[in-house]
Image (cartoon, rainbow, N blue to C red):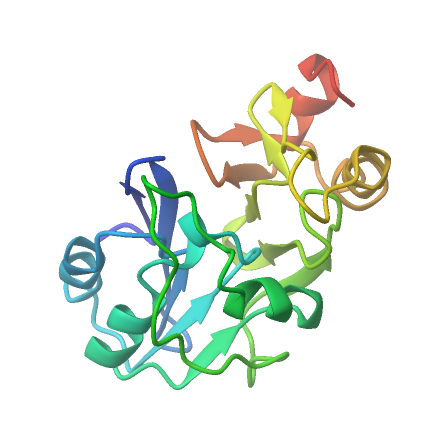
Length: 201
């Protein structure tokens, strides 16, 4: 099995990532926005001891399947930055009539015990936006902060374009150029490729 599985889920084809760390026997499920049965089926292909859900931010297309997956995989840790909690539980966090609000969401934590990754705070797309840097496998999961050739939108509540660009320039563009970048939508890229060719930064 590959260490990283990507599954575009839901109407908006949000990239849900499954990241398996052999040394800790942990399976990290990043941004499970929809299609819980598909994600659980992917997860069961891995020989993990514990599944952990990581959320780059709390928009509904990134959290829609959290409750179902947490129940089926007996997830005890769901990480979300503290500045994303209000949006996480907000009744207005939907894209009706296309994407309904997430129901029965489990409580979230601000830290993961003995993590295999580094959390990089990147507000701008949302106030609580973060990226997850798995150094050992040279992978950066950026949610909707950065895309291949583009950046996240900032016209939704809590978005700020100046803050987003500053986050990307100061927090992400300083990372190794060969680092693989896995965004919330669309194809993967690298830090070097975005430094050279992304017109927004």
